[in-house]
Amino acid sequence: MVSGLKMVFVSLMLVFSSFVFAGGNISNDKSKKEVVMDTIEVHGMVLKGKITNIGPHKLSFRLVNIDGINHIAYKDIDAIHTKYRYNISYGDERINGRVVGIVDQESLKVQSAGTTKVVKITDIDHFAMTIEDDPSVENYVRNKVPYLKGNFSIGLELESGSSVTDEIRVQANLLRKKAQNETYLHFDYEYETKKTPGIPKTETTDELSIMVGNRYFYDRDNFLYGALIGEYDRIRNIDARWVPTAGYGHNFKLGKSSWIKPSIGLAYVWTRYTDNTLYGDSSYTAAALGLTGEYLIEDVYLINKVKIDGRVVYFPSFTDPNEDWLTRANLAFTVPVYEFFTTKLSFDYINDSNPDPSIGNNKTQTNLMFGFEF
Image (tube, rainbow, N blue to C red):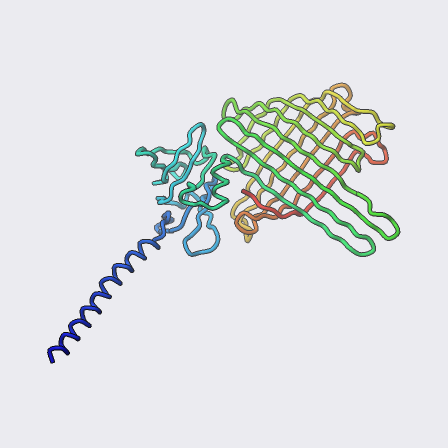
């Protein structure tokens, strides 16, 4: 009887001990699996997740356990508090801290190194989670190459039948904005071949255009710029063309994320043609007239938003603008497809004083491309 009671007592002790230790382990597991989250209060409703981007109009927020990104207007946000730490750059300042509030729907309260700073949202050049909180490759690049944004698009055409046509077009636009400087790069390459029965494959398009430059804003709206354009278009008899240019421009703000920048200056246009026996090198000094702009349409039915951007440059010769000139224009409509993936409809217009009458002065192109923005 006694031995039986001892066995029951020992069994009860083992069961009790297992519950005690199991409870301790479960609580430890829960603490290990606890997810750190940012919180945003929108019209009294608390959302949990993490901030992925700060835009001029809206904040991008990834909700926990839900795929996709929500874009929340600042006017709808009552409060923000982040558990993650973010690297934030504005003007010449760079801080590391947590967002602890929003002021008048246009500035963020950031707690950093024991102090609280109020940062105007439109002044932010760089906003990214720290590598310690997000070690992903994408976030690592964003932190190591800050102030950089841009887009990359590609278009392909493969046509078969009585003739076979293969075409590829690649566009890239990069902008690095830090304090008073904007450094930009525009890249555009297109190549096409065509093969018909009984005729060897021929190149019908082979062209490249690169523009790199810098704008220095000596105050909020006025800037000085310098740029270099390099291009070729073998089918149009242009073997190489270089255009250095410099001048003055002004920034007109049409809203928090829409603007136009007209500019005026001087340029030198030098061209070498593929057939040097017929056409010698051409060079002339020219006026430099330019216009760039961007307009964002938000809350569009079904597609959320549309970005319209364009660029025009015109270089008429001082000596004889009717004989020597160069014009380049581009207009693009970009629509986000999913997160940072986009589709783009691009229109290009080229007009220059080409000496070959069989080629002519005008050229227009229309392309539908797919790519991504960052």
